Image (cartoon, rainbow, N blue to C red; front, side, top):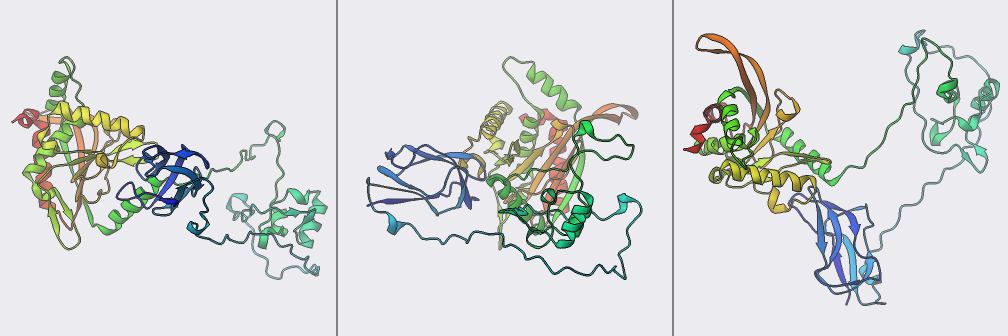
Length: 424
């Protein structure tokens, strides 16, 4: 008996998948455990193994196409087996066919008694409607009004070159009035007022990752009442500590690694920040799993440093570098990105001084890290050069109040300005 292979749910947020590639084609022999296809989820591209032995009889989702979770991905059975009963007949939509529009009776050439005013300055004119992509010429017949044809003939315009904005793509008077023939740049007349260039755009399909980012962050932003707390951190001691650490052989620690370590200690001191809104109760997490936002080509991934409060800087540094590599290669697995209790987003390396981030559910807070900037600071009553980093804590007010968030930031400030205290 043939077996149906369904689109798998490969992550907790996955609602549909895209077939990135098929490793088998219809008619190929398939063995249990062989890679059948690569499936693009909202977070990564993952290899999908066959659970059955047999012959690939049917492919339900072509390469590059998407399908909902639990829809038919493939059918595996014996060669020549009848699988018609397994396929659900889905009626195809009727093809769209352009229906010729009969020429309207010729209207008397009567001027409009209330003509719309036209601005003398062309910059102030309202832009004409864009032409629809529907072809205006089918089997030699041009879909255009008699008036449009007449004006085009008088102006010497090829009616076939004009895009139509009327019903069904029909060419009407305004299309001819606003038509500008293409002129190659090397032959274009020189004028101080000439406008050059061609309007263009590219429509890109939305990736599964981008769809999920849009859905989850919109839910967070418009469901969780956000508020924001910003604090300046004096980074002199942190810079000196990092320099001393990286002078040691085989050691490479980033400021982001130090931030993760300081956040972990701050969460242990302020456990109410390490919490989640669960609808009808608040979950107080006793473990510290810190999500670290990583930018990738299609959007953003948040791998998780688990039990960060129990790890040293070297271990944190190694994990973050490995996660960043796996994220860019689309090799992260669900176990890498699930289970965060707090999130960090760092744009300091891009020269961003400060910003606010949207809370990453199920967390109640996210810390936005800005760049280190040299500014005047007061030290021992004197104005001297200093290095300051701005951080902004975004909080879900359903879980975290202002005083609670402020206490967390004070703890974080203490650890970053006295890095030795993180060793205690």
